[in-house]
Image (cartoon, rainbow, N blue to C red; front, side):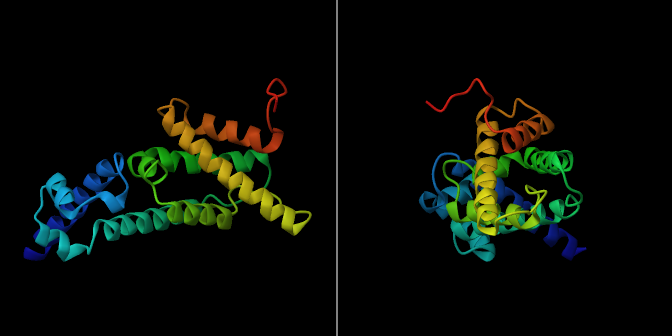
Amino acid sequence: MDGKRTDRRTMYTNRALKDSIIKLLRDKPVDKITVKELCEAADINRSTFYAHYGSPADLMHKIERDLLRDLEEYLADANAGDGAREMSRRIAILFEYVARNADVCITVLGEHGNVRFQRELMALIQNTGILMAANDGDGEKIEYLIKFIVSGSIGVVQKWFEGGMSKTPRETAEMLIDFIYFGLPPHVSAG
């Protein structure tokens, strides 16, 4: 019985710390968050914090690792088939995941997010093949295209957050697919 209580306490502590750092990161970067303010926000004492983490950056690193691992598992089932329709389905799955985990995703992809994490997220999305249905042609050009699509996709997610996620995950995915396959609408000029 004591083990279950300890597990629940640990789960509560981790949840309180995670929620608190996510809230604090909306106002400042992790290197400006002190253990004291994090503990106050989570309503735990410093010794409890140090029993789990060495610094707020360590806590954030764990949150990022967990997010990447969870997303990788989530996307593993989404990789099947080719073509625009299948890619749209896979991207919609990605947007649905982001919507369900919006509090963390908004923070890690936001103004005070970690650029290294964003690069790791881009690499994960690239490596899952979720954004490329075909790999024909010049290998180097394909690498540039994938990087362009993944970077743009993260930008679309960030814009979606800024707009309060007013479009559904499927609508946003379809818009992204239109950008990927058809580029800018004819009435939008570069000049």
